[in-house]
Image 1 (spheres, rainbow, N blue to C red):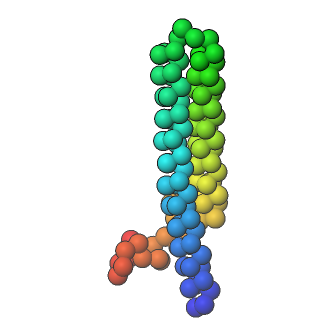
Image 2: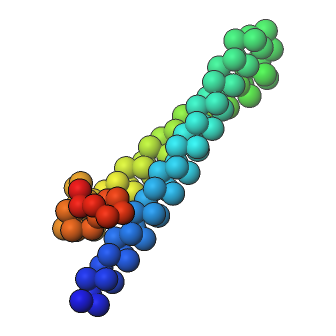
Image 3: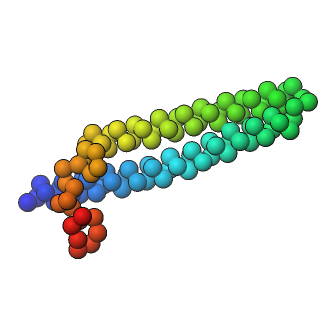
Length: 104
């Protein structure tokens, strides 16, 4: 019985960490899109100055790098969670109540 309770605690902790990481990654993706967009706006508005164009291109590059890094992080989190819990919730799906007082 103690192993079952321990398993529930571990699965709950993994789910909370996963939800938190997904939230953080979502916020960082939004930030990367804003950086990318800001670079494009600056590239268009400052088309007459070569040094400003270079800065805008650098901003666009870092926005794309940030997007790629966050998408990679999201994929890694998903793969790790699916490895430990299995796709769709793992071996405890249907055993651990999704809502208080109910079985999913």
